[in-house]
Structures are given as structure tokens and as C-alpha cells.
Image (cartoon, rainbow, N blue to C red; front, side, top):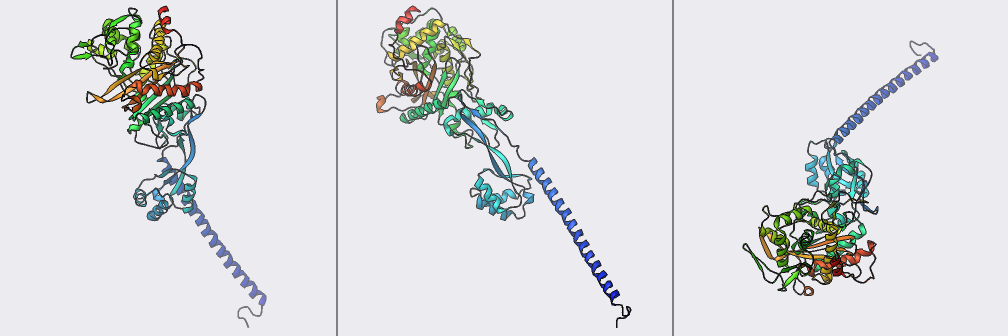
Length: 548
């Protein structure tokens, strides 16, 4: 018998079901409340973590995109590739030591102890490794380390490595230009997607660097430089300075490999300066290629004595003074013209002011503050004045460009701009003939290339250290152009401390080392430049000069 319910079994069953239902509803309600609280908590964590991530990213360098750089033919010189970089939010890391160990396991170039020190800081954002490979990225992901995140970045890539090091320069780890074209056009490269097109021709650059490198090694020089310019426009087609570096690798900006000898050095040109001394004489109208000067005896001026290396001991014409590289004859020309006229001429052709092809790495010429007769004499044969190879090739190109100088450039240009006349057409034509004769009959025969009518002048100058000249260390250079029947390209090669070899018979002078390098370069690049080897007979240059 069931008390309180009598014998009503139905009522007893109903009551039991009601209690069970209430308990079930209570359990479900509790579950939903707990689930709701969990959802809220998860949302808070996600929002908070997201907020922390955003705050962390505020401290990250902005991702910089850069436009491509092309050579004159549209071949890529510099481009940017997408990549990822690993960074940490230290406040999100649960176990610093464990995290450091996991990272060091997959990124073996990183040191565990160094990572622990870095991750123990209170920074909101911390770079761990830039520009991971896809394999490295996946390996880090597989570790599942809290507080480690990836950021999409870009990496600057130079497909040709060292080839254009001193032209292109490079960027830092944050993709900001630090030297060369990358630095000069940093803003433009970041603000526009349009590529910058250089005047450089990659094929020519390859050939020039190859031949220069061979020459540096052959003559055991400390380094060397070569530059090729299109005379009619001032465009630089090739620019090489050795030693060089790989712009794909971040290196010390003060390292010697980063020194651009073409634009940053100030070097005494030696006898190559006789080109300018001769052009000055002809431009004066008082002297012709056939004017005679007494070169029989050394000149005593001040405390200096001017003499000739293997002098001929006779009167020499202006043509012979250049051809036999007579210091005495050059000095006599300078004294005849006068130091004021000489200084003005050197300034007019751009040798006394900085010259730039668009790079920030540019040197200032060095010359006497007081331009005395002694200065005038030594400068006439290339001592007492120091200029960059860029100065040299720009001035020579101007003289041979019908006397019109173009500002040099590393950007492709269809037509010359900012032209100015520096000598007359007559002087220009006379210099073409004289420089060709200097190669065919003078001491620079090793620069000649059959069919290309090469003209030019070598120059050797002793290096200075602490204001004193070094007898056993020199710069050896050759500057010239081709073809002299109608000069299209100028070229300058200079070696830093070349050594004598059995082939040079013990000489370290430019006619034995720089001149043949120029010939090798012209042989390689002439066909690439579209210059046809002439089968015509050699013009009668002396007859041409008499008619001018």
C-alpha cells in the first residue's frame, strides 16, 4: 500500500515523470549557461589576442614593395619576390625555454640561448627570422608554438649577383635602398610599380666585367675599373669596379668591396691628361698639330725637373708630343698657353667640378688651390690633379662628340640632354686624328683592334700615401674611343697597382696592361654593339689634319 496516494498508480507515475522532466530541464539549462559563458570567454580571448596581435604589428616595420629595375633591353636587373618572415609576441609565449628550443631545432642557424634572451624581453614585437623558405615556414608551423606568427614580406633579388653591384647598390633588410640606384631612386621605386630602365646593357656588362677580371688577375692588381659610354647620348652602357660584392647579401657598407672606383675615386690620370692639354692648345687657335716645341732638354721649374721617359732629345711637333707622350713637350705647351687659360679650359670641360651619372657615390676632383706655373706644368702631363674615371670618360666623350659634352647618365635616354659645347668641331676632328695616330704609330699599339680604328691615350701615375708618391705602386689607365672615323663609344680602363709580368718585360705602365685589356673588351663588345668591322683602308690622318 502506497501512503498518500491511495491505490492511484496512475497519479504516482505522472508525478515521477514530472520530476524527471524538471531535472532534465535543469541539467540542460545549466549546460547552456556554461556553454554560453564558455563562448563569451572564448570571444574575449580571441578579441584580446587579436587586439594584442594588432598592437604587436604596430611595432613591425611596414612591408615595402619595390618596382623592378631593368636594363636597356628590358632584362630584369632587380625584382622583389613574395616571402614570409617569422616574428614573436613574447607576451603570448607560454614557455620561453621550450619555445626557443623548438625554434632552434628547425632553424638551426639560430642559437637557443640567444633566443631565450630575446624572448625574455618585454617587447610587443620581435623579429625571429626574415625571409623564410617554404620548407622553414612549414617546419615552424608543425611545431605549433604559441606566440609565433608569420608576416607576408618581400625580398629584393638580384638575379645576376655581383655583375651590377656598383650600379644597383642594394637594399637593407627592410627593403630600403642603401646605395647605388636602389638608394637614389628609393622613393620612386616604392611609390610606383613602373620599372626603372637603365642605360646598362647586361650582355655588354658581362663582357666588360669578364675581361677586366681577367686583366686584374693577369697583372695581379689590387683592383680595377672599366666604363663604356655611348658618346652621342652620354649613356653608360657598362660600369664595373673590382673588387665587388653580391647585393643579395647584406654586408658592411664600409667594406672595401663597396667602393665604386668609377665614381668615388680621385686618381691622377697621368699621361692621359695630355689629351686635354693638347685639345686646349688646338682650341686656342695659336697652335696646330704641326707646331714645334723644343723637347731636347729637361725643364727646371721651381724645385722640380721635368724630363721624358725614353725621350727623343729633339724638337717635337704637337702630334709627336702626344704620340711619344713627352712630358717636356706638354709642359712647353702649357707654358705657351698660360696657366689662366689652362685652368679655365679644364674647368670648361668639367674636370674641376663634381660630375654625377645619377649615383650618390660621387667624388670631388682634387687640384691646387693656387694654380701656379709649377701646377700648370705638372697638370699638363697628369700630375697634381686627381679626378674620377667618370670625369675622364665624360670629358673625352665631349671632345670627340663634335666638341659637345653630354651629362653622363645611368638611365636609358633616346636623345642627349643638357648638352654644351666645350671645343670647336675643328678641334674635335683634329683630336680624333691625333688619338688614332697615337695608337697606330705611338706607344699604345696594344689597344688596337683591326677594323675598329681605335684611338686613345694611356696614362700611368704613381699612387700617393701620406702626401708622398710611392715608387712601386701606381694607377695604370687607358682611355679611348672607337671607331675614330666616327666615334660612337668611349672606354676607360684603370688598374690599381698592376704588377710586371714576363709578357710586359718588367714594365708596369698602362701601355702594357690597361691598353690590351681595352683591346680585348672592344673585340668582345664591338659585334654586340652592332659596330661592323671596317674593311676599308686606314684613312690618311695626317692629310686630314692638314686640310682642317
